[in-house]
Length: 250
Ligand code: ADP
Image 1 (cartoon, helix red, strand yellow):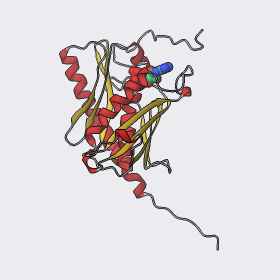
Image 2: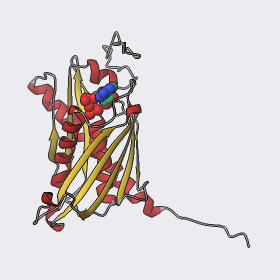
Image 3: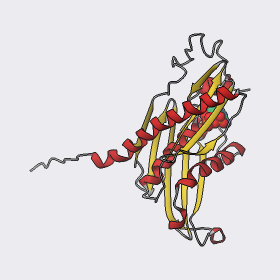
């Protein structure tokens, strides 16, 4: 017997376009980004986005184990997306499952084009994404955090990768689907872009959209991603702007 039974809200979006969490269709949930919070990792970042709490850690470039995975002319990029057992309403079985294996691959492929892999021949860069609390959109939140963690590790990059999901509920194209919309909405479309060039490095859709809804969703996603990118840059600069004082007792 499940301990937690979810109920579909009667109305996902009102005729006036008000969503279950009070947002308008084009609004993002609150986002907070913090860089460099782990001292044992080469780079790290933490993202709080709606109810999501996600930590990203980067190790490398470092020696590859096992050795047979070495790529002599470039870096090997590995990514692991993991959901903590306590990150979901019902305890999630620890360890990898089909979904986390797929998301690890999707996230790796979203980030890899940003990295100058030729700069680190024969080494590995490991990216860990730990979902501590999940609330829809964890893959895009993970991409944003991991991209900042890579930059924080000093990895040579063509640019940051920023990501956001968009979707559709009825006739409304919406930004940043929440949990209700992810579960019961009509379409969900996570996307990521390598910034500056705005090359799309992740685009998935499930659920039908007309061509005009798709175009609207793409534009909405692009704008949200540009906004998140500005936040990432600010978060990356922040530690270097801190002024520290210590008061001596003598
Ligand atoms: P994303 O997190 O990128 O939106 P999904 O669409 O697969 O990926 O998942 C949507 C949401 O469903 C997750 O963010 C999470 O809140 C919830 N979820 C995913 N897997 C589980 C699970 N095993 N148990 C409970 N909730 C889950």
